[in-house]
Image (tube, rainbow, N blue to C red):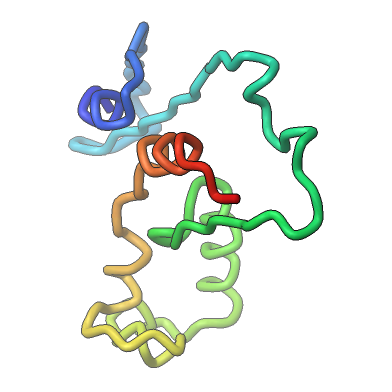
Length: 125
């Protein structure tokens, strides 16, 4: 978590751990977190200066993020064969890769703070 904060240019200002005997087995743990930010009113998005014809910049997602895993769990439980996680991801998606579905689902979330900040500094008009 601390490394992610450093890579994103933010500070880790607090933290908490909890032991829950009987809920987690040996070696199991749970990590939860949230972010709080501040922004100048003039920098809020969408900017009031946006007009038809402006360019849109998109960043490719590194995969499923946060609440998307609820849908993934449901799909795996209801619609996907039991051995699906061991199959090549290209079996399910038009995505040529040697990675298995499990590899794609477990890939670390890309940190978007720096690329978004860089894009905001560039005039795209």
